Length: 335
Image 1: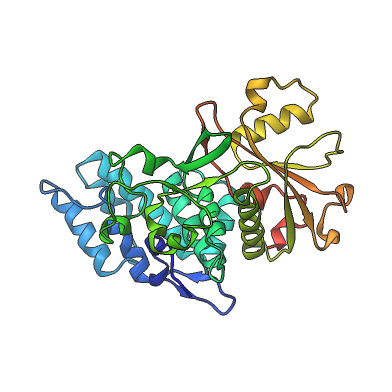
Image 2: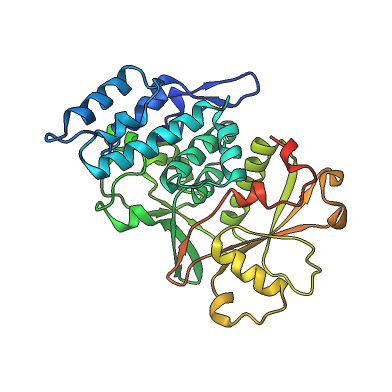
């Protein structure tokens, strides 16, 4: 099987008997490669000592005093967030369980960067047997911001960080460690180049056609099916729609903040202007294989999903909504 997404660090993770990713010391040490935590030449002894001790034993208890004695305020805050996140991971048997607990209770002060890294790794596990690179590229929407442009009548989504150039820090420390090129040429995934995805997956330099009726939205639908199956153990079918007219909507899920606002307005009977409707990127219909798992009042009814972009053409997908937003009985029992 062709490997992909080395930058998520999946080679440093183990699997439990149920296939979930188990945190290892080597995986925890990857966070030390982040530039925010690498002590600068003028770092104080407390910061250097904490860094060295973490590398020696990334599971060691870290007292509040170990952090408060660091002189640099930014370094103190970075260490406080890292240790809180490390402790959360270690309280759970798998990354999947840690993620589910985090999004169900509320992410609190957990940095979005850490959430995206969790999603990146968990998706790598969920998609391990996927052979269609289009599904992998579509899955990048789950953890990387996309910039949408209209090109020759097609809606094209490209990685925002890649298109912005080299001024931003890499999302994963492994990106730097792997020696990936700083500047990349963007290609739209098509039949001729789709095979090249495997060798360039960590560059995030392939764009996706999200025009209704094209294979990009079909691939995104498949990625969402696999995400739900992996995290919740539920079989669902997700079908892309080109339009939704006069259909009774019993339940909906916004796949991002903008889509949720639009769905809420429609649900409440409010008028949605053309500027808002122009932000809608994709619509989907989700059906459960086992309708008995659904809330009684919507049993047997489809769930509609909406993906939208911001007014300036950015997609900030929230894959956690696919876990917390479905009309399931006893959500707490699903893990």
